[in-house]
Length: 263
Image (cartoon, rainbow, N blue to C red; front, side, top):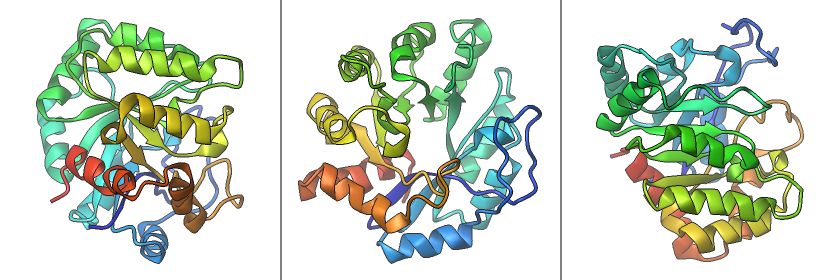
């Protein structure tokens, strides 16, 4: 196992799109294409993240996991009240977390309610995590609502700090406060979705959290940014952000192998 891509999406060209989806790609992104790109840069395993435009219909992701159980793991989208038996079946299939996509001003759900807290308890018992995609300045409020739930958090895309003065400081402050109580991981992924300087972000995250709390993801196929990037470029970004070989080995392989339970 050389490296693990911890953030990518696969989908056919015809749905199943969720009602009201803000974005609906008219092209397919399949595992065969992704695997070929991985092999060109020494990536051996990957994590599929449920795209927002599919809502809670995880069928495409689950089919990919079933077809490639040794190579893939997954992160699904669910609603509170999901049956524990279903979660256990998905765990056996390779699912390792749930995603909360609150980007774009989406209202923050009642994460402190009994329904959400019960879901967090169930996924925590399975060894899963909660993956969170939101504006950096909203992280403190989201963490507050999650409360004392004993579940690791994985934060997408550097924590999405904005361009305003002090934005990186506010993201780091929120992450450090949460990390003092429960494990927090951050993805070094999708720099083109980040308004702050990503080299500064990467190095300050490394100094604040350490390499054992960082991971890399390609964000392939770069939805809404198609045609502007390539996979080799995405893999090489990590080398430029973090020049230490031992730290990169943790970020590219050791941390995600443990978190996603790759053998």
